Structures are given as C-alpha cells and as structure tokens.
Length: 325
Ligand code: NCD
Image (cartoon, rainbow, N blue to C red):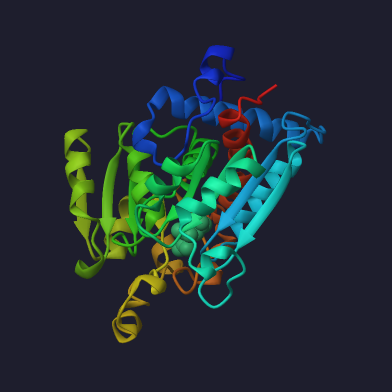
C-alpha cells in the first residue's frame, strides 16, 4: 500500500528553492509532507530504474568534518542518481586534508566553496556550526549533523520509514532509547514528531537525559512524555522503538563512557514484549545496542531505514536547488 499522495504542486515545490535545511523547527507539517511525497516520487523512479536528469550539470559539495558512512555516501549517491556531480572533503581529527587543518575558519572555507558548487551538505563536530555555515553560504546548505545539535535529514528519513512501515505517524507511541543528551538524531526527530499526535517515552540513564529545552518545546505542543530507565517496560508500550548509540566521541571521561556504554542492549527478550506490528529503528552505526539475533525480527527496520536515506536525500537536494522536474 502506498501512503503518499503523489508529486506535490509546483507551488509546494517552489517553497523550498534556495532554503537551507538546518533544523526541522523551521518547517511546518505540510512542508515536511511535501518532502515525504517528493522522496516517494524519487523512490518510485529508482524502483523503475529510470535514469534521472533533474540535477544535470549541478555540483554538490559534501563537506564532512566528522566520520560518516551512510549520510555522506547516500548524499553522494543521491546526487549521482539525479544526474549531478559531487566534490568532497572528508576529514576528522587525525585525518585532515583541507585548509581547516592549516587554521582556516569554517566561515572562510564555505565562502570559497560557494563558488565551486550549487548546494552544500556539511557535517561538523561543533554544536551550532549550522548557523555559522548558513551565514557564510550563498548556496543552499543541508546540515548533516552539527556536534550534539541537529541532524534533520536523518529525522526526515526516519519519518519516511515510519510512514512506509506503519502507514502514518498519528496515534503511535515512540520509545526513544539511549543517549538522548548527545544524540543529534533524536533531537531532530522530536522536532518532527511534535507536529503529530504522538506519545513519547524517553528511555535513558539520568546522565543522558534529553536537554531541557526539548521538554519545553514538547510541552508547548501538548505532547505527553513518560520517562524511564527500564527498557523492558518501554518495550511493552512502543509501536516504534528507536535505539541510539551512546555517543562515545562526546564523553570527556573515557571511564564514564565505559561505565555507561552497555546500559541498554536490545535482545529477543524485549522483542517478545513489543506490541503486535511494532518496529525497531536505529540511525546506525550500532555498536552493542541491538544483538544481531534481533535482525531477523520482521519489524527490525533499521537496514530498510538506512536505504530510505537515498530517496529522502534526493528529494532534499532537488528541492533546495529548485530542480525537481
Ligand atoms: C548518526 C550521527 O552521525 O549522528 N549517524 C548517522 O548519521 N546515521 C548517529 C550516530 O552516529 O550514532
């Protein structure tokens, strides 16, 4: 069954031209649904093996100043699938290749890179870098993760996956599990979920609770929240169980990470408690949060979720450059 409503109107598409995708709080539910419908339109084109030319002659600058597999490769594949080209900088501490290593500011780098491309996808370790990047950019920017801040394209592919797997978002109970303090994927996901009629259960140790501004935002939207550190309890209630990795790279104290890293490990014991038809998501990479036995459960949707990154990122690239044909 297809839960999407077809290619949006030219007016709905044109709203996105030259916009940045920095965080989802800037967008309405209707705009989010436009992105979902364009993603589905591209997914159908991919399934039909159509050769697309929507972004012929355009260039994406993929700037990844922190490790990435899925996000960078799916943005690059998305650009190729749309007929466009890619230039890339990848570096992280210990593997530096760009002029940032020489002391250039991010702002200066972006000012230069503007002249080489039509759209920028950027990941930075610095919380709030999305604002500095957007200020310097003269082409549209997609934030691919700014430290512990936001990761909007991940949340969009999460929403797309839930619609495909569950038929919609309204009425569902979500358990968000793990490092809710440092996990930027869950920060963006709650911005999207706050647009719907949902119930949330936050499952974390006290040290890794959601930042307080998120509670304020959800309260303002009237979203009920339960908090627990008991994954068995949350498993009984969750239509969508969203596991996350404890974000090792954000810990100053390695011993503290070692103490807490295996706090939640999802096993068949939890899966047996899930309501019928429940799904399990994870932005990946997983370290130890889900035992591999769980992978054969039909509702284990995390690899399908990662695959959905391709059509969703095709939609974002084509929308912000005004290229959806
Ligand atoms: C996430 C990230 O980078 O925030 N990865 C991803 O983009 N799928 C999650 C993580 O690294 O834990």
